[in-house]
Image (tube, rainbow, N blue to C red; front, side, top):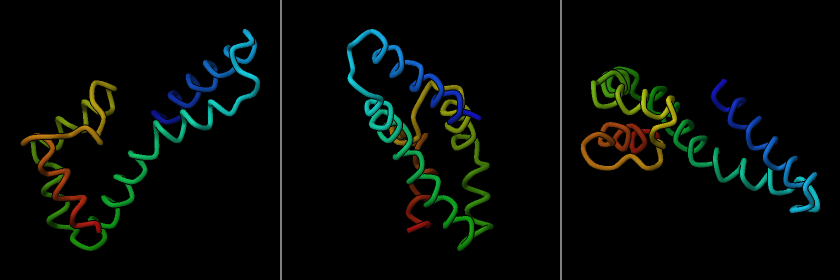
Length: 100
């Protein structure tokens, strides 16, 4: 649902730009969609692979308190998963490495 809401907002913005004459077509929507979701899709795919290869370890890392707080912040829109740095993002980075 998160992606649908964000996609709807991006589409509305691109449509308004087109209607106001600031854009000649809706290509900016596709560019913004890719820029917004490509990092998240990459992370999601690698996490999926980590869960398939190492389910026990991946589950423990994903349910650790720092991981859960990061997940909540990403879902609320307070942070981006691709911007996770420091200790808070350590478990996410380990999960990504397991999924390579």
